[in-house]
Image 1: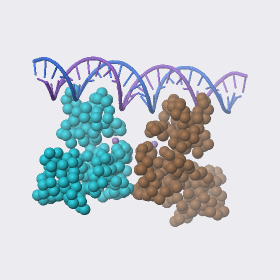
Image 2: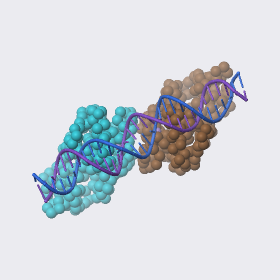
Image 3: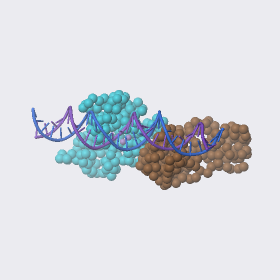
Image 4: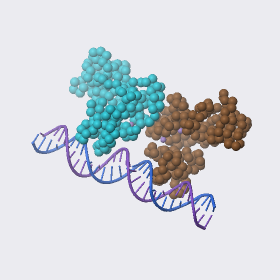
Length: 220
Length: 220
DNA sequence: TAATTTTGTTAGAATACTCTAACTCCATAC
DNA sequence: GTATGGAGTTAGAGTATTCTAACAAAATTA
Ligand SMILES: [Mn+2]
Ligand SMILES: [Mn+2]
Ligand SMILES: [Mn+2]
Ligand SMILES: [Mn+2]
């Protein structure tokens, strides 16, 4: 069984590859906040266990075995986040930190019970898909709010990142998953958008925010 | 902050001292399933941190600081066990293993929320007291069933040990905390007892079992 | 292409935890 | 009181994870 450290590396690699199509040792190094040589030697270790594909100076990828392992950790992470929100009443801005630890608990009955109690959820509180028991995960084929046009009506269905700061920013503006929004205007200079939704008739969102909001197009 | 390993040592020491009045390095070594030199060197480490009192060849004890740390880990352990039983529907025979891992989660809000959701329980599913937030713990001044006499009526209020085997044994006989039992007879030769309770009019319990059942005397 | 910057690698070392082997201390049993 | 066996200790070493320093390769910029 993979150690806590190894699990963190596998999950990081899985997420990096699914977000950017590829991953390098320095991506891992900065995401996990370890030095480059540390990441380098861990990658060699994971290669030895046939969990990652790696050739000197080449980009990284997970083997099938590594993908499975990583997806199962991600499953535990996302199930936990959902459990913390739906069963324990936590806000979506605090659950990631706790799940980062609980994802390493070694107990199949624990996570199976969570899953049952929640009725087998398919997404986590941030809208990301939860891998199934075999490590299969749904494609994320969402549009970014930033790519929408004036007049578009969309529904917020997921977030590209779930840092607490960002989530609190959304809380302060009553932005939750499921909210229907309409694009009022787009500023060509800096990509900021004015949108309306719920009780908010006019809210300005900067480009970095719009990029991180994943939406489903309802009308345009 | 203490590492997972250090927390396990502190908790083990706390339990050994509270159960037997004292603890030695070999007690720790066998309880934690590590070699004697391993326990020895960890004790030196904990002494350096002013968590245990230790002089070569002398018995061990926790400092006030060590007691507090240990009690807070024990609090997390027992809150978790109670949570797993009352909020997640697990049987008391499986929760110890899971709690052994979750007790090391570093998140005060997580355990505070557990505590709130359960209405601040004071005992765990095996009847052991849950230390409070300051690390204070109630004295356990229970009688053992094995010390009762024929004719005594007692209520089962705690278990001295919570190994899964033992708990399954109790499950098979419908023995739960709170059950009122009557001592029908005691076999002087081997200390086994015949008791009646609930729908069980005559159940034989061996001495090792009776020793581990802690009771409150109702009548005699 | 040449210079520069970024990324990756190797070497060497530190810390935490663990072990076995060998030895010493201590309680108690004769 | 000495012999003995169990408990405790020290020495030395291995694995996992991490780091810094020094260097090499690759990518980017000029
Ligand atoms: Mn998360
Ligand atoms: Mn993690
Ligand atoms: Mn327990
Ligand atoms: Mn533990």
